[in-house]
Image (tube, rainbow, N blue to C red):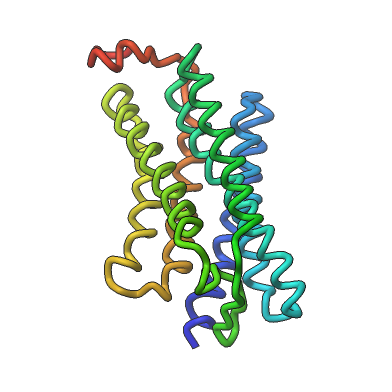
Length: 235
């Protein structure tokens, strides 16, 4: 019964919020012409795809369900590292810092896509919802790699958010990463791993909402990394 009262309404509400934020992001893009907003919209579309595949899983045959879920994991591996690009944009990284940040994103995206392709999946039937998760005999390396990539990118967001708050008093970016990490950790912390997907979805929704507020209000003034390292104020 949980799927009726928690999971399904959450997925539908999340999809509505995502679609609305896409509309708002397009409006901001048309005004400011910032490429980062296009990547932000791509990130949201990936989350919408994730929700739709899980929501409609009950209507699919096992082979079709496995096909679409395979792309869920591939898109996951591709899009999670976009958070690194968001961090670089938030900090206005320039020169070698910008290219290092971009290189890390490219490497992790390629690695994530490969993990999504080679991972083995099993169908998880939760009465109403049907989705796929790692096979019980999947290699620990693949499972741990997915977890570390997720946590690493979110921690980078939190660190970038702390820098932005200290230097700019802008807390949106920090809250975006903080809530994503918080809701991802609640399930394992309380021993309710079966709630991981639902709780992480709350975190994703909050992450997207606060990212939108950040990108909407972001100034164009660059942050000087040398000043940050020296602990000097940024005007």
